[in-house]
Image: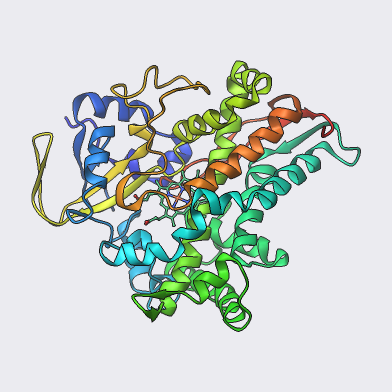
Amino acid sequence: MSITDGLDLVSNQAYAEKGVPHDLWTRLRAESPVHWCTPPNFTPFWAITKHADICEISKQPDVFSSASGIAMIREAEDEAIRQQNQGFGAMRVIIEMDPPEHRSVRNVASPVFTPRAVKAMDATIRTSAREIVDRLAGPTGAGEGECDFANDVAAAHPLRILSTMLGVPREAEPDILRLTNQLFASEDPDLQREGEDRRQSIAELGLELYQLFDKIIQDRRANPRDDLASLLANAETDGEPMGMMETLGYFLITFTAGHDTTKNALVGGMRAFLENPDQLEKMKSDRGLVDSAVEEVVRWTSPVNHMKRMVTRDYELRGQKLKAGDWLVMFYASANRDEEIFEAPFEFRIDRNPNRHLGFGIGEHFCLGANLARRSQRALFHELAQRMEWAELAGDPEQIHSAFVVGLKKLPMRYRIRAAA
Ligand code: HEM
């Protein structure tokens, strides 16, 4: 009998109920690293679980195309999205483009995400981290308390940073947060959009996002400033103004790719620290370890759980014959526990070195926001390492109903924060 039909690898429900399927991946890596899956209600796919194979695939975007979509979702939902000719069904995002188009559209925003450009964002990033930890500390600036780290801390930090970059006014921050939650956790009963008809709900969600970003785009065309929103609103590709669907798509991908990913890394990282208090103590006593701790947090949490590709020509991988038109799914979370690459992969070690994790992907689509994601996490963990006297779990963490951007929606925590130095 086959090890798995793949349902537990891609079903949102399975992640909510059973958590991330590390046991299954460990078996697949050992016994069937290129595994044919036929889960009910999903298109069949090859499950790719080894680090080396994900590297090989990601470096050949001409053979493994992103253009047919990158998230493994149920066939019915996939169809509903594709049938939208308005809203985000029609938006074009770089993550779903292949070269050469991909390269020229990626170049539009890449100057904003270089290490140097992101360093210029430091004031915003640090202020956000300080304000959030101040809020935890309470009105006197120091004290004990309880919070839901997922919503009160981890969601708030990237929300402020990305909203600042994209020109989203403070009063619209809750709207944008709700919309991205609905987009990524469309099957989570606590986060999903209300409405009986899935197709209708998806159309409305797309329209709302469209309206929000369109207002900002029109404003930045009339009054350009020195920010990412203005750069995108006035961008050209190949000497022509960038199309409206590409422009809207850029806003959408920057926000959606940047928010829940960073949030899930932060909340999963905090949980790892609570469950490994020696590692928290280590970071508190040597804050020089914050940078490598952030790499370990991204490896450990792997917020982007998978990416899908379509095979464009017959290809042999570990003796398996992939056919043109087949789908494959690369599981980064599995590659990040690959015993052939990582010593003691199931141990959370903040001083892991080297740490060749694939949490940000690799190759053509390597995460455009990796520098920003790193700096945002460093700022928050640095602030916490400096000011958190102690912290402990105050209830059961809850997993989001999602097999794509994976993480916790609740992390109840008790803590004591000391005053800022
Ligand atoms: C811990 C946080 C993050 C993680 C784990 C993460 C992970 C990833 C991964 C795995 C990919 C590769 C997709 C593929 O191969 O198809 C990717 C692409 C991307 N990420 Fe991130 N990301 C994070 C934060 C961010 C942030 C903060 C931004 C922007 C503000 C961002 C923007 C993007 C964009 C635009 C792409 C598409 C790049 C392309 O297609 O060329 N990400 N990310």
